[in-house]
Length: 162
Image (cartoon, rainbow, N blue to C red; front, side, top):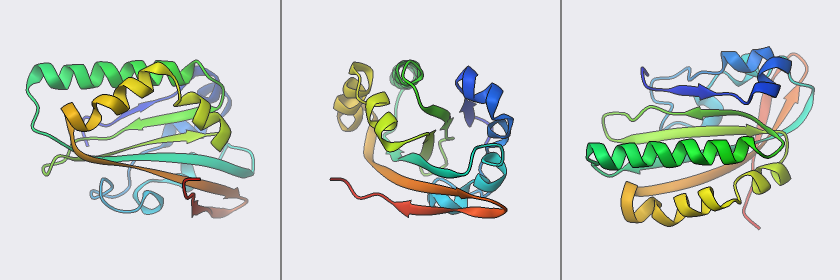
């Protein structure tokens, strides 16, 4: 997982040091459930107890040339910066492209409402518009309520789109 990258907004990273410990715990994290693929219990240790919101982005990338890959990463960086400009983003994990070109990335937010605002800006809209046309064979966005509990693994509850 050499190319995986954990991006943390500065405020939550300072307040919740355990977020710095977030990483995949399975080699097949790109295709297994989000709940099982990462070390949620350890990473959420410093967070207050309660409900959080996770957005998972699963994709299979088209075979891209260097220029297309660079454009994808620039768009991803701009989308991250756009989300950081809104309250509530706790972490963004940019996954590694595996041999079959599958990839999973994930964001942890304080709330669903903040995630919707944070991902509703022009950079995210442009990324969605280009996604299937340019970069991906397919992609899927998963949404989960995650309940952080004392001394127990978090509980994941899938959120259905309204």
